[in-house]
Length: 471
Image (cartoon, rainbow, N blue to C red):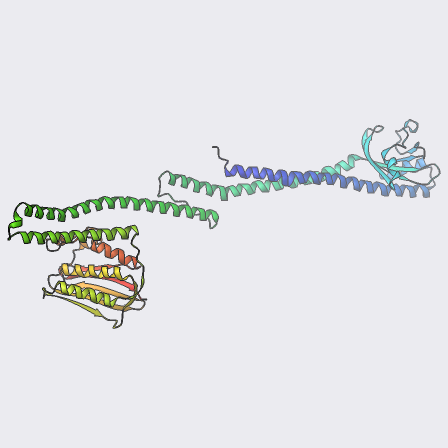
């Protein structure tokens, strides 16, 4: 499909504007000028006609001589007509009176029947020129009509002069309009064309291309919107690529993490079915190990479901005002029961606020956060103290979960919130985990419009911290 460019549209619009807005009015104005000039000449001839009547009555000259004198003074043609239409005097000496036609049927004489004076513009067969005639009826002995005439040369000169001026105006306006179109093309069409070129490059896959914002108007806004759209598309594509990579990695990790406990359970059950079931020295041990791996498998599936629901947006985290202190106390009490046989670890709550801790949160999800963080602290601490510290900081509360465990090395510190990532220390048989706890914690805290931070010194301990808004 052939596209009509904006420049062509502007030219066509200009042409139509000139045609309708200038040429047509000019034609009407020229016709008006023509009428006005003829009216002015008519009025002038009428005044001279009356002046000649006064002159002829007061001069006592022969009517023919009076007509000749008046014609010399004014440059007008004077014709005197009798009542029967016969020409009795003519100022033009080249004309033979007895050869002139009867003038009673001349248009300017005929018009006297309905008006005080008669006017006509026509070609003179006698003098071979266009004349404008003005006739008046008078009461005299021999003369009944006085007719004065002037060639249209003078009238045409006036018309041509005014038409020339009008045409000059048209040319000037047309030139201004063309200059206007030039600048419109420069200020509007060229920037739009550049934006179109950028859009075409973006369409072709050059997502890093951006349009220059050259003005603070609709065109600048269009360029900005194109840039924002390109940036959004580029970000979305990067996210899709990243998600694709994450899916591949996720699938690999999930397969590995699921195969380990399943293989262990399968191995123990096959051993039991192959005769070890009746061996009291191993059957109970194998069943306990199978149960332990089942719990591990259950925790892994639960964490997988949770992080999948969080990342897909299926898990809605609604924030409501809650008192978080009882939740923390309950989780700590449960943790103490789990490690009651370990006298070398102490868990404490340090509340510097001394009040109820009212925050905007989701009780189930924030419980999951503290449970994961405290469980991690227990897992990585051979001995020492685990502290949950609460600080009051104006419009929010600060929470710190600290331990005196093995700490995290610098290389691992930047990756602990990645799914399935575990430090080398965490891969020992005593510290097995799903590798999903901290990513889940990170997502939940971010859903609370906050962020989680971690500080750690290898061999001395780790502190996780985050803030929650007061309710």
